[in-house]
Image (cartoon, rainbow, N blue to C red):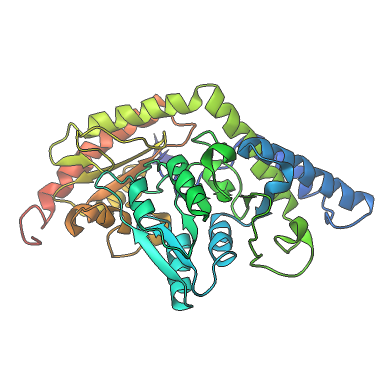
Length: 397
């Protein structure tokens, strides 16, 4: 953006909050806003064009999930998918196992189910952010009906051992749901290997449009629809289909599959590693998501979460924003919240360190120049804030 004769650089490193539409996605969606506006439930030509577009998108998503076309259900995004899995399967007296580091779409649903008479166990992570499969096994009860564990944590990027947990669920005869919103497009999907019955994703986390998502629902899974009305989505999700959004999701998924195959995500991981390595050379910093040996545990390719001692993370987010860098202090769903991250607290960080943590999450279009700019401005911002911080002066303890 030109300002006062200077070109102002903006670098966006908050991809886990949302991502911009790729041009190819906009191009794919455009006809379904204007020319092909029909209702996919109508039998005339306009309606059937819309139906054909949805059928093609469903085929693409079946390839993305590695499942049958009939196991793909389109919806409004990750929150609806997570809510559908929990509210659609659990009744009073049923037992749910989930974790204390889930997204609020799962955590709040779990708390509401507990209020309605369901039993809920929240499994805490190891200090690395990993969920120990044996802790899930130890939480099993005779009435355990559902296990819900995320694939990639939205704040740390830590990849959870879902295949092992899926085997535990199968042995126990429990259903298994994966919130894969942050893993979509960053990790190859294979529903059979995951061993899940339900999995939810959201388009806007992988360069698709906001307000649309999809679920994998394994055939025979008796999940009840949250929305009732028409017979849309084989009676599994009522409501006139968002044709343009569904087409955009499918195009984003197609591009994501290409990115996993052509080395794009490996390039993003290398950029993330360079960014992380250089920032961690600064004194008073550390990585959230490291094992006992100090090395990172498996994470989504684009994400790192770093603490900066003697700082308030919110102040650093604002300082970096003024210097042209967009990052996050945690989940976008909690922006403006004064409480520190529930994820970092569950991992064992104290409140000060949790509040002093920032998440850097790179777009798949990130460049070396983006990283160069961030590495220029982060030390400046940190040094300035530490010089004026009451935390550094010891007044906040």
